[in-house]
Amino acid sequence: MDFELDPPNGITGFPLGAAADTVRAVAAELGQVKVRDDGSADPVHYMKVLALHPQFEIVFHIEDGKTLTAAEMWIPRPGVEEITVRFRGIDVFRTPARELLKQLEGMGLTVLDETLYAFVPQLSMGFTRVAGHEVPLDTDGEPLYFQAILTGPRDYYDYRLA
Image (tube, rainbow, N blue to C red):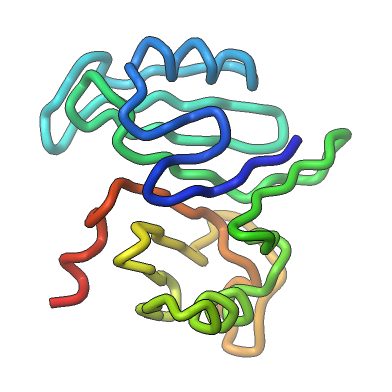
């Protein structure tokens, strides 16, 4: 199973702006679905659709309670399926975090590296190295690979440029 990150448009099968019911239906094709705060647009407790596959999770943020605002993919776990998540040909979860950021900068993208978190503001991607379980560590003592990547709409992270 292959996913392509296409910020600020979404990810494979899940275009940003898609209706919440469509997101829920397509997510069900990936595995179990859990919906939190159905229809809510509250800034703190807005609607989320979680796609729970045996090897990965995707959190679909539906901040207005109606349409897909952002998609957050978590690093795939080993299992029977080969799961790849790519951005412009780069395997984002199998490329060491610091190397991935260098490759993004090599594409002429602005990268804000905060060690555990990184952002590509003008492209609307956010990364985290925070892990809730044992993972391989880099020489800086932090997770070697990013653990999750969020793809949002245009300008989603641009406030970080100020």
